[in-house]
Image 1 (cartoon, helix red, strand yellow):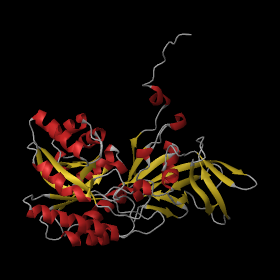
Image 2 (cartoon, rainbow, N blue to C red; image 1 turned 60 degrees about the horizontal axis):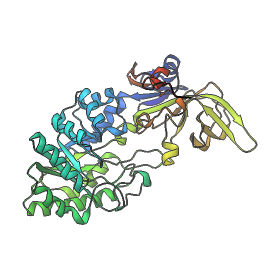
Image 3 (cartoon, helix red, strand yellow; image 1 turned 120 degrees about the vertical axis):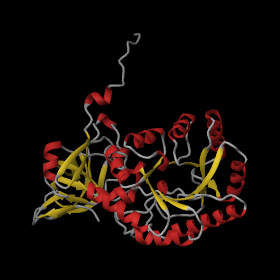
Image 4 (cartoon, one colour; image 1 turned 90 degrees about the horizontal axis):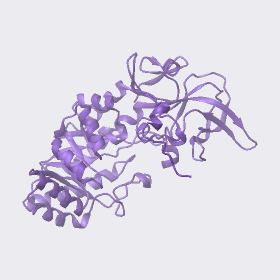
Length: 418
């Protein structure tokens, strides 16, 4: 559920008319609903209430400081994958002891920064990383809390680019080597073994893969305990999908499925939801520039582009597109919704049946809160869109639109020889 709905013929974000936001701020523009963000967090949190747990929001999905502050105020921790994300969390007031550092390529500087901050734990993905963390911790004369991320070798049935739990993925430690890794980690006095983690992918729309992963990691935790390694945390990752086109299970069904094989382990469950919290809480509003017809195609040319939302071309992702104002009697057409960027992959929809929009009208690209603005770029020297957070009737600009000066302020004109 989200709080974008029509009142009469006009689309609203909570109590704010989309057309008014676009008139004041311009397009393209990202608009988020605070009520939707809060509701999604509460629903997910309540679904896990049967277990001792901590939600660590996977901030790679949407990392605006105001969004992080909103979740932090609700008790959320954070899953990070870079020093930049660490700094964002701390700037937004996050508790360092609720931060989990994931990712396959942590640098010495990033490890040091995380140790200085006092994070909850590192999710370790390889043997070299294990020794690198120990080395940095030794220099700093501290113990580094680590959790080993196991690759459970299963197919989550999602897009290959966001599938992380299969054997050939770059993520995690091979299932067959987990106990060897724990033995090595146990021999390093600079490390404190606190957890086990797994993450099988993103936009998963059935519970089966989660159950299978849960059974595998539960077996590992039990064996480790019998070997004298009593872990405190079991990080089950994230990955629950949202209804772009397919209907995923609700958080309650997901939680029931994932928690069943984990009963009686005596560990705190860490969950890392990202998309499921923010995906349907955001839209990208864009204005129609032209309607172009050829002998074989109809193109709706809008001012938003792939640099604003790359998911359709990168992941072949479906996003519903709603008119901001519904006009009765409009004949439906089949059209491509495309942007101004000079790439054939610059589209939001292809061969989509939709009410025939006219130049000047506004369209809302739905379910754009996750992996939308965070993956935006300045390709073609385009300014990145502003971000707006709506709370009731109040409209907060939480990131201003790029200016031309922002695009070039780190470049230098140098004098070159002839």
